Image (tube, rainbow, N blue to C red; front, side):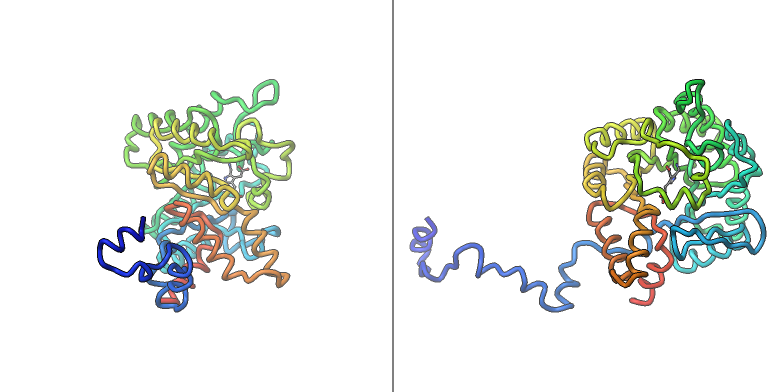
Length: 348
Ligand code: PBG
């Protein structure tokens, strides 16, 4: 066929290379740095980063998270300094997680509804010192329950969906009132996005954004986080009755569809690297801002291996974050945010 056409056009049949190799040599575009830069499809920028931080009571206090070398819980005054540094680096937003004093945790998560609780005070302090940075708060009860679950239990000891949703509404309003910009329900109760959205509208928090942890798996990658917020001490069992089965993908789209319908502004997939297929599908299906969480366990794996000299920390960090973007993520929650922002800054 090709030969026939070539004859008609007057060109020599032999002048046309066969499709494929060697006419196509994909290495050509990769040869020089300038060319690789020119054809690059995905670019990670500081605008893609959200920095999760942990707060504790006290002043000038910092405490190490053992399973997350390099990550420290900070008292509010130091958290303000951290937020100032984040703003200087151009990081758009931080997510604040409280390590509530054990004496304040109870069965009913009462401290979650206290407008003067640790996370609300941190939000107020950071908002007034660094108004230009976005503040994100989890909506979930695990930093406040004595049993460590994200919700309230019924008589059978199970997490009670509807009673928990009522509690989450109150928690959400308390945090919105404190000045939180983005509420991020990470609890996986059914119906909570709609319920929280309705309550925000009724209470004139019409501009408060909701980032739904729409697709959150019952994952072993959260282990170090639970140490960081202090919820692992009493925690028994698992969260499989409300967080998703890691084996499921179709269900992820059902979860996301419901949260979109209920009024989510943004969606989250969590954990990150083992779930890139889900990130891709959620972004493709809904075209909403789609975030991904590089969890504490992912952080620990990279840092642990790098400390032993088994991996090149900087390169693995950049590669993993670029992979999130390639998979369709609009932003990434990552404990590496400040070091990455610094690296990107020094590269320009
Ligand atoms: C609480 C919450 C968790 C994480 C974020 N919010 C832990 C959990 O659900 O048990 C995990 C974050 C991380 O591992 O870095 N609902």
